Length: 448
Image (cartoon, rainbow, N blue to C red; front, side, top):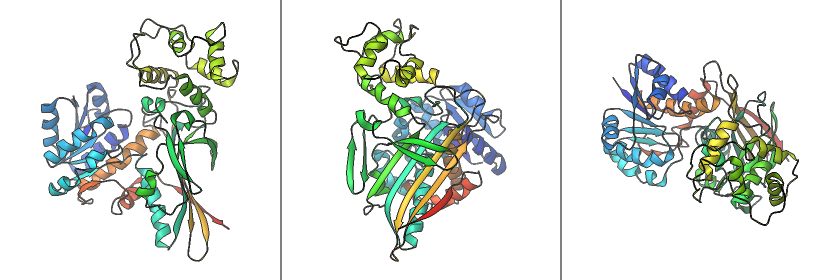
């Protein structure tokens, strides 16, 4: 009996676990789901005959080693900080490992050893990264197979509430790691636009937005996402004049988030004093200089930020609770942790509501015949409140789950440390995703 070890049963894991339990029943496999919150793992397994839940401490060396050496493949859905630890242990015990996280450079250095040990370390098998890069590689390969060159590569990803969900004035709900929402843009952004490199410091990321229209969904705002120049290397786009990777939000998000960055509450570099007995109003006051005029906190913040004291942005800040007299109630290491806790409370996805995932590519190509075209490719998926599987959980979990199935069935025989843009990986995964109703709609526009 082949054994699958799943590390992490958090909000991105439900579909992964459900799919692999189903495959375990069909193929006489066994799935062990590990999490520090054993109740979470137990709920995920739900007494399935081919699975069990286990309370798991990743920092317990003996437990970690025991579990890894007694399985055939590890699925690592723990935080990215543990990627190297788990990969190193898997190499030691000659076990395959699949993860949805960005490939850690130190993990990539395990490539030769993984080949020697006859195992596959497969990273970036999620939504973003994952489906985004696999689908883009399929388009780019198709262009090159016809003798074409990519002139412009623009790609967007997003996890949002479904259009009918309007539960808060920011038109956003937390469906994935809230800490990543708070720290979005903190590394700045760089991209290539019409042959010119553009560099944005953190304070400017949410100021440099533009509109993107998605068929049947309407208009969204986009902001640049981290280092888009990495995609030049991934897809070999050295001759492209534009390379941009962006994130989509509903209109109005960025103007509010820019002011939170300016206020300073999204930066985690400074340690907070004890704040448990303070109010959120006190917390906001900490970030204001002494010389800002105004009798009330709200007016002083508006004056400091240079915004309308009765405008939309101020109403959004008020909705988030930054002017509240409610006690914070516990201490936090830094403001990122505090804001993460706050937005989890203020921006939840309402019960029985759908979330939505969007991947959208706009790729321009030229051909030796003189023909130019734009390929528009879009995936939209919605959560299922009845099954309690969110769109983000399905799209993050499905690629990793499929990869595990292919590995155990002997249909994925690559070895080393890889990402799924490999030509022997992405076609198989994309084909299987179609069977799960995860497919792209594509249109081609001829350009002059």
